Amino acid sequence: MIHLDHLTTTPPHPEVIDAMRPWLESRFGAAGSLHQLGLEARDALDEARARLAKFVNAADPEEIIFTSGGTEAVNLAVKGAALANRRFGKHIVTTLIEHPAVLGSIAWLKEQGFECTQLSVDNQGRLDPAALGQALRDDTAIVCLHHGNHDLGTIQPIAEAAKLTRERGIPLFVDATLSGGWLPLDAQELGADLIALAPHRFHGPKGVGVLYRHRRTQIEPLIHGGVQENDLRAGTENIAAIVGAGVAAESAIADLQSRMKQTGELQRKLLNGLRDAVEGVDLNGPEPGKHRLPHHLSLSTEQVEGEGQALAMDLQGVAIHAGAACTTKSMQIPPALEAIGLDADLARGTTLWGVGVGTTEVEILEAIRVFTDVTANLRAITPAKDLLA
View 1 (cartoon, rainbow, N blue to C red):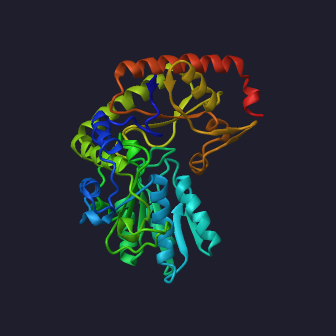
View 2 (cartoon, rainbow, N blue to C red):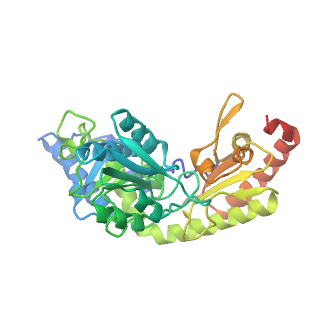
View 3 (cartoon, rainbow, N blue to C red):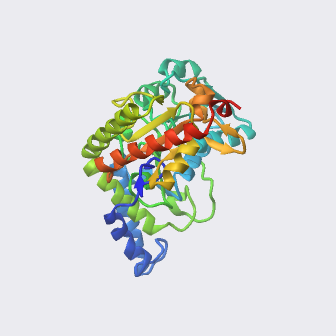
């Protein structure tokens, strides 16, 4: 199988698996226990926390909180900070194109009496910092923005946004669950107060998430029980996954520049090859370069459905992701595609492509060949009028 769905998840590096294995076998202690097995687990937890702190350039390892995954990290940041700051106000600012974990958390907060301003983006999916500045109010409790967009690949001007929120003393949460491991991620340079990460998207394991919390940023815990994670996230730690996350972070630090260069070159080769081979292929979001994630492509193809393309390619051994979910005869268009003004019929033909560290040029060429054949076959059996129904 040619895996070009590195946006959804990535295969764990061999060194990650090797590091995790003892913690799934003989070293199975819980970090809260006082015996030797527990002390070993606590040391491993501390080491992984230090590695993740270095990964985001945190001032202190204690600014790292481990969760069950990126979604929980997002929920803890958005809900936790909003609830902790509700005495100052119940206003939230975000964009129209955030990940469902962010928008779902905000929807829950609205049920608790919060209100939300959702900002528009330009036709490349980029936020205007001036619009953010105008949206901030004295009762704004938190601003929620993503670093790299899941549907478009657009990189947001986080440092410019952070300057505005810092001047007003408003916490800024940054969703880096897609960009972590693929872009430089320095909490000090970005000016973010909260950053969520998903290690399984940068060759770490599933089952663990990471939240960076600036030491002066207040959040309320969402899971209650024990005193783990400085009383901010109760529950016995998943030591094996946390160890794996630490190793994946360390690997990403060491390889980041070569990773960005390698995937960026493959990204351009893939995009140019698809454009040359198939008529009517449009790129959503910025062209490859400084404003786009180096491993991400969002493509909309005329006169075809993206879900059909993804399924047909899977049957021929190439894994990509459909950009719109099908429910019966209706297609749910991602809010990001609507926000940039993409025609609904063209949006239905959206697929997402993610190259990775192990992707080869041979695989890129094969994927282009398969995509070309699949698209031609689908167009031949699907009259244009059916796409408009």
